[in-house]
Amino acid sequence: MRRPLVVGNWKMNGSRTEAKELVAGVLAGLNRIPNAEVVVCPPFVFLAEVGVQLAGSPIALGAQNCSTEKGGAFTGEVAVAMLADVGSRYIIVGHSERRTLYSEGDAVVAAKFAAVRAAGLVPILCVGERLDEREAGVTEAIVARQLDAVMDMEGVAALTQGVLAYEPVWAIGTGRTASPQQAQEVHAFIRSRIAARDPETARKVRILYGGSVKGSNAAELFSMPDIDGGLIGGASLNAQEFLAICAAA
Image (cartoon, rainbow, N blue to C red; front, side, top):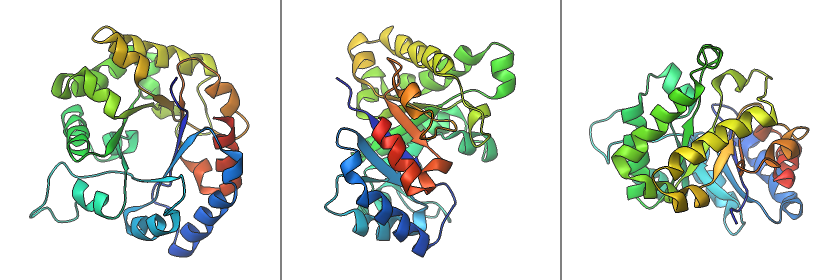
């Protein structure tokens, strides 16, 4: 049985005060989420303080990105070991905003997945298509290419040490959400793609949905057989909304 997982991606939002208040609000509602695993991913500069606040709680700390390098002359980059040192257990790799705004290709994303896994942390690998790609009917080809890049580099079994997240780019921050059926179709495709290489890995790996998930639509999305939770953006910035999503999981 795959345990539900909800990951809050704060993106580039908040202040120290807002981060402290948001975490306090989520911690106050822990009784509402007894069965789901929960992760929060603040901006880099808040990681250490949020980690201290989460200490002793069942909520894990995650980071939004990382470098492929272990250290050295890479101004502005943050190494996986540094993120682990401040308490991060999870790291998001290949988010659509990194792929589109910062031109991170499949090879770079695969290398980041490998770097996170090598350090003993859990990579959250994001895959998904743009609106024009969905309308062109190439969703599966795009997702397969992104997924295969990691499986080809790391081997299919490596996915059991990570988490996958399907995020249709056209549904991120737009208010548009893939219908539960649309999301399930792609999740099922991802699982079948993995199963073609290793059925046991496909059975075990958790696949999250990300794209305008809210408290009002989370339960229906999470009821789909291949959707194991959510990668939550904007709604994770409101403690009560985030808790409602976690409760649905």
